[in-house]
Image 1 (tube, helix red, strand yellow):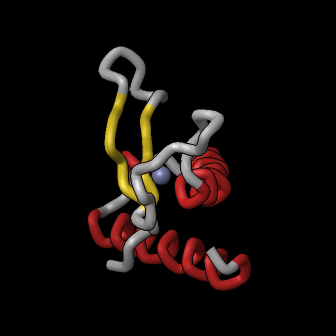
Image 2 (cartoon, rainbow, N blue to C red; image 1 turned 30 degrees about the vertical axis):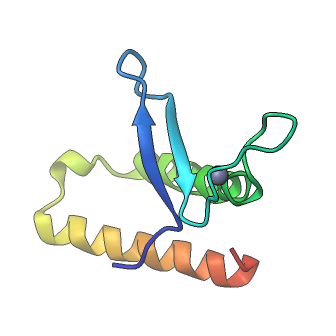
Length: 91
Ligand SMILES: [Zn+2]
C-alpha cells in the first residue's frame, strides 16, 4: 500500500479526536513563530479532505454490516480517491 505522506505520532488518551501527525518529509524543525514546518503544514489539507470523505461515507453505510471483502474494496477505493486527489493537487 502506498504511503499517505504522513504518519500518526500521538493520540490524546483522553480525547481521541486530538492527535498529532507528522509529514514523512518533516525535517523536525518548527518555524521561527512556533508553527509546524512547511511539510507538516502541507498535510493538513490532505487530512481534512480524508476526514470529509470519511464523514460523507458514514452517512450512507454502517461499516458494521460490511463483509471483510467489502471493507477491503472500500479501502482500495479510498486509496484510489486519495491518490487521484494527490495527483490533481500535486501533494
Ligand atoms: Zn514537520
